[in-house]
Image 1 (cartoon, one colour):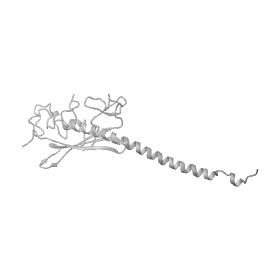
Image 2: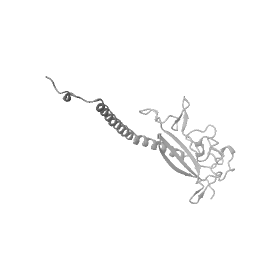
Image 3: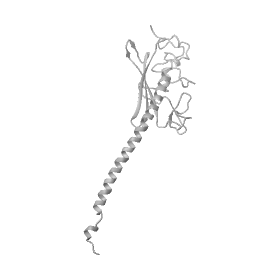
Image 4: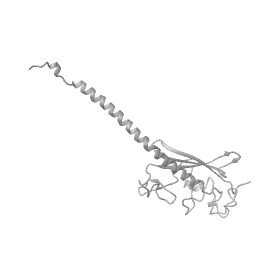
Amino acid sequence: MYRNARFQQGLTIIELVIFIVIVGIAAAALVQVMNLANRNSTDPLRRKQALLIAQAYMEEVQQAQFTICDPQDANAATATAPGQCASPQFEENAQHFGPELNNSRPFDNINDYVLNNNYVMGSAVRAFAVADSSGNLVDTDVAGNPLGSGTVGGTLSGITTTLALNPVTTLGNLTSTLQNMTVMRITITTTYGPGQSVTLEGYRTRYAPEVR
């Protein structure tokens, strides 16, 4: 029995192509939404980890001494100005950054944390990192262990921390100079992803010994 060919037609090529394009656009949008949801679900955890790391490093630095002479110096408890240290190599001022020989974390003076006698005030440095076997800098705890080692999931990869020290020239009635630093601003920044970081700022004051 003959049927009209007009009623036997299916999808045309053009209709099929349009259908595929629409489905492709919808699928791409769905994938983007799922990726955004997955990323946002992990960001709070990473941010909390970064904040805890920054807080721990800030506490470590603020607990260090802030004397004019390194605590190893015989005059550390009495010196109130540069030049009063028993040994010049133990002076802690703008010309004497970095730890003394055989000094390791936790350092005994805040100036030791920048690890470089040529430190530029206010610049950010990897003060808490050591080079691994491949030469890559890895943040460590005070014992020298990579952060997260020994825990479920291993090291906290992708998280890096920097430290910046800067003398505050005026803070209330306190004043500082590069040679006689009385107030130090500590800035710690922990980065946990592209464009994602937390920054903490704290202060360390030299309250004793000090000129009265």
